[in-house]
Image (cartoon, rainbow, N blue to C red; front, top):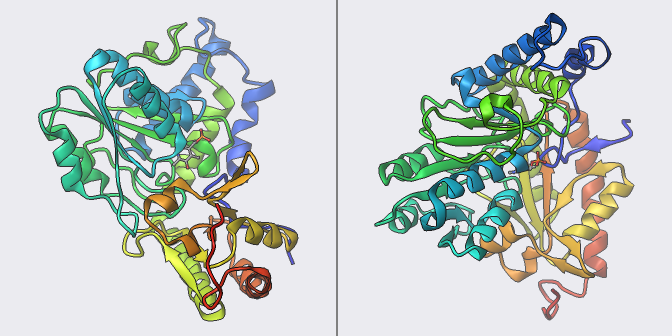
Length: 394
Ligand SMILES: *Cc1c(COP(=O)(O)O)cnc(C)c1O
């Protein structure tokens, strides 16, 4: 039996050994500065160029449309703040209620600075109503739209190509946080008319601390990081060469056999879902089963808290996550699950299982063996239940 069953891959992933191997020469041997004039640095510059071509291929885009960043949070901030600063005070910002904080928080800052901002609602399955987007765009000048490609908590996939087309038709700038889609869905920028797209290395087997922002040619934004001329003057700071090499390798690995791997993941995920539904009563699957990432399962165990499940599973060596974040002594349910209008009895029990290329059949067997007793045990202790009065816990 393995020591850790890691089903929290939407939080972060294991660095692939192939990625680490590709990175290694760039620490102690090829450590030149890619901007240097001498051959020692220049050869490193060529390696960064090759990495940029690889990441561009991942987007089916041009190498000059790729900016390397330190993480997706930086990519999101660059896209949203950068576009807003280009347009000045008039820019209207439109996003969704279920975005990652790396999009919601810059949006709220734009609002605090006096710009008009809207967070589009979702329905019970976490789906967007594109007519709401059309209505919000009506009569706008210089709108900036940011709609995630796939949701990190539920795996729900948004119709990003359609949303981008609607935004472009209205003359808006369109950004998408594709962190969870990267490596799981093809990001083909010849088919999706987005202007800017954020990805993060550590969500698909590169290390933490490297990301990229795709910027379509002609897109207007003001750089977020000011300083040197790196990244064609669009992101100052000496490039993190080893990690950029790693990001490119992760792109190459993800592109090879993506469809086949997705079929394998979806089969494992579906078996996990069926197993949970068969062994535990009062379970609700969150998200849109018709449009869901193949690796993600989010379920609510009614009447119990996701946090308790997470701790109990952790004792069995199983890593999952819950939408509840313990903040200042109170348990706040996930803003994503809350936005979907999930009933009170299930709001706090949301639990996310997210798989990766390293997840095996045995991992799923192990979880299906350990999880039901955990759920039954917690239900016995819970003051809530189908036949017990439902009070309020926040
Ligand atoms: C993890 C995540 C981020 C943040 O990525 P970092 O590289 O850790 O900054 C942004 N958006 C989504 C959807 C994510 O899942």
